[in-house]
Image (cartoon, rainbow, N blue to C red; front, top):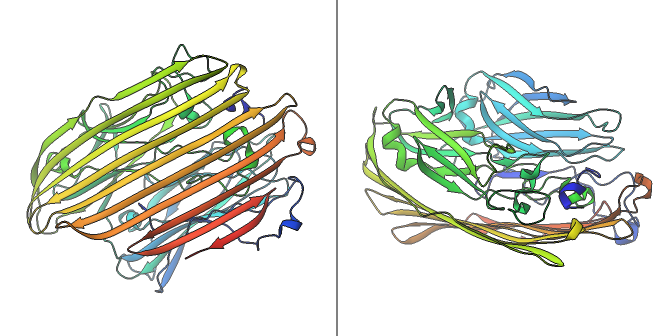
Length: 535
C-alpha cells in the first residue's frame, strides 16, 4: 500500500503573513495522554501574526458561510466607511470551526475576481476544533476601493460517514495611513477569450508582477506529484517524465517566467492525519503565490491591446488535470507618462534537464535530477529616464524515491531550489535583488505486518534575499520554516482501537535588516507541550 493509497484510510515574500490559533498554555509532559483520544489542541502554527499599525481601523465582513458541498458562497463587498480609500495596511482574518469526521479540504476566496486567499482546512476532532488564518492583503488595495462581488468555496462532502460542516467567517480590517511599501496601482485578472486568457495592461505600466496560486489539487496523483514515476518503474502513480514539475508563464507564446512549485502537504497527507492535527505543514492554511516579474515584457504589453497569457505546469501527463493556477497581475504605473514605451531585448532559456533513473531491486529506487534556466530583459522609456530590467531564474530538483514491492515502505528525499536575480539599471545606481528559495522533503511511510502504519517526515521551506544598490547591501532577510513529525496508528480498525501516537514540531525563524522572529512549537499525542520564542 503506497502512502497515496493509504490516504483513503482516514483521510510576501517573507514578512507580513501569519497563521495562528487560539492559544492554550503548553501542557507538562506528565499531563500528556498515552495516545490520541477524541479531542486535541486547536491547530496552531509558529508563523508570526501580521503586524498591525496603531492607527484608526475599520472592519468589513467579507464572507460568512457553512460549507457542506461544492456550492460556492457568493456575496457582495462594500468599501469601509470612515477609513478613506488609502490604507497603511489591510489584514484578512479567517475564523473557522468544524467537528465530527472530515477530510482536509481546499478552498479559495475571490474579491472582484482577484484571488486573495488560497487555503486548506485541518481535520476535526469529534468534539470540534477552531482555527484562524491571518494574511496581509494590502497589495490588493486597488480591488478594495470599489464595490465587488465575493466568491468563496471550500469544497466539502457531508454524509453519514463524513459529518464535518466547515463553518467560516472572513473579515478585512483597514488601517488608515500611508503604506511603507506602495501598493500596486492596479490589480488585474486575466480575461477569458476564444483564443484563451488575455491581459490588457494600462499603457503607462512601469512594473508588472504576476502572481500564481499554483497547487496540485486533491484526489489524485498530482497532489503527490513529487512521488510520481515514469515507466517502467513499478509504482502506483505514474507520470510520463517522472516527478519534475515547473510552473511556467508565457506572454504571446514567449516564455516569460519559470518557478519551482512548493511541495504542499495538506492535513491528511502522507497517509497519516495524526501528523497534522495540531501543527500543519508549512503554508497549508495560507498558500503563498508564485511571483513572476514581467517588467521586461511591459514595453510589449503597453500597446493597449490584449495579449495572450498562459500558465502551465511542466511534467503533468497529457490530458490529466490536477493543478489549479489562478493568476493576478499587479501593476505599478508611471504617474507622469500616459504611455510608457519600450521593448523586450532578451528571452533566453536553456533546455529543460530532466533525468529519472530507475533501479529495481528489493528496494526499488528512482533518482531524479532536473533543472531549467531563463533570462529575460527589456527596457522602458519612463518619465525618469530609460530603465532596463533583467530577470534571471534558475531551477534545480534532486530526489531519491525508494519503495518496496507492495509499497509497504515508501520514502522520498528531495530538494528543490529556485534562484532568482532581478536587476534594474537606469538613472542612478543599479539595484539588484537576489532571492534563493529552497524546499526540502525527507520522509517515509511504513506499513508493518501488524497493520501498524508509521510516517516520519521533515519538511523545509527556506529562503534568503539580499538587496543591493550600487553594489552596497541595503536590505537582507533569512527565512526558515521547518516541520518534523513522527506518527503511528493501526489501520482498518475503529477509531477507539487505532492506538495512535505521534509527535510533531515546527520552528519558524526570520531574521534580517527588519528584525528577528524565532518561535518553536511541539505537540505530543495532540497536546501542545512547547511554545517557545527566542528573539
